[in-house]
Length: 316
Image (cartoon, rainbow, N blue to C red; front, side, top):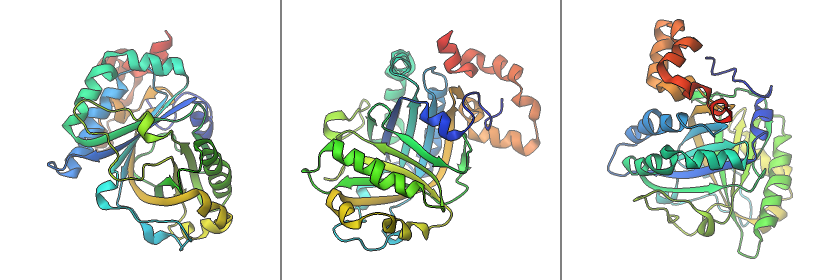
């Protein structure tokens, strides 16, 4: 099984834009556990549970660093600061080809009960939001790696947007974020990847897990976010110059900039990756000793059964 060449459309952009629905969660780790323990449990235990359930088209985990307000020029009326306690530490991001796939995924015993129950093991807070149908779009991806595993290959950020005021309608904000911010930025020659995710209002749409708080920490929930990969950090200082800044200030009250330290792809193009099947430590060890026979489809099916077929299993 080759993580870098899953079945499906030819490019990463085509693969991701084939999906109708996208699910974003904002995660904060338990304060009584070391953050590295929470991150590893998330990837190698909790994440693998998702890989056993047919229905997801793509599932990735983004490990975040602390907010970086220093990367932007001053833009009147926009705040780039956020209190430490309000900063999420991880973003799991899932794609579903259709509402029927989402329903089938949700009806499985693992996501219906076991996965939500497991969240309290490592999470201190979580909020999950489903983007409007076909709202999330990948506008450019010059890296074109459908299954990134580990440290990101270029500076990567989750840019999270807070509207300027309640007078800006949700629909207006989503259109502005997609068409007047994300699209011009995606045309910058030093932007390597850009995906935009409009989000519904948090208070009315958030999905929670049992015994894990889901109230937003602070008074500025996000109404959208952009996954941005650039050639170097200095590109961010140039991006506001590609927009009408007065228009930006009228609609955007804050931009929070979280470096993405690592990305782990658990499911790609409807099938579990090797990391999704085995966990990252096992894959790293297989690489270290050159045990290529462990990657054969026959061996993987003997070990993991029809879970290796992902969405194909659901179709059958």
